[in-house]
Length: 350
Image (cartoon, rainbow, N blue to C red):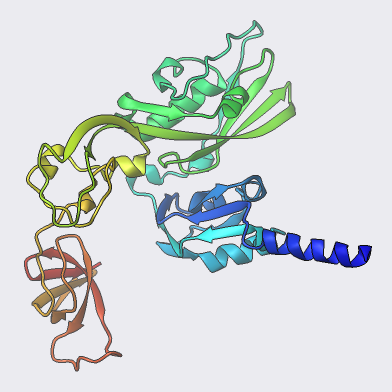
């Protein structure tokens, strides 16, 4: 009888536990990394839970070419190979598009190494705040001061209105201890929503600690925030939104719609009250409509080729749409072209 009771208890526990995930991996829509950099799990996905956070530095791919996609199946395979129990992990999202950084941001962050020598005298404790102003510490030869300098230099003009979100535990790791020499090594791109750095402490020539910290930049933006639930097609006016200065993650700050864009615009999608209005939320004038004849241009070196195509969907300037070469039979299996809309009746294959 006791044996039967134990079996039923185990079955009940397994049924109750079914579908209860302790950890979550949520794929980001897109990320930018330095050319040749190692792409880690923490860079392509948001991690929730101690069991998955220990795999934050798990290598997923190497960015040694152009843009590419990381699928949820690839993450499952990598985590399983690393010893993770997939039954306890909830996955969200399908793919993350990994693109190379542009311009100055394309410099390889991992090559930046800064040595910091702390004074032997006691160092004042850094006050813990929700958001840290990097300008307060940029002049200090401490781990926190060097981190503030590195991030500020990466963001250029935006640094003047930037704040850093650093968790209390990470702030403690950035507090200098007397007599130790520090090495700060960026372990991710410096112009992203989440920046990983390694803090190595030396006593003489001997390494005494090596710890990872995460810094999350926030940029000041005047955002238009909806006052009520707004449906697709709604006309925006001064009653439907308010202007509010907020500190936002760089990826969000880059999408915030300006007030002059919002005024007298209409919404392209339904958004709830309290939402920040982004540029993509606003309906844009169509430059190409479905079934329009479009001149598609392709440049190969010094040679430019133009063909006539038929639009298979609507598109505004900047959209990537599907087209089919004019004169070809239109059927489900027909080969489609993808091109960027650049104007009325014009598109370019990038």
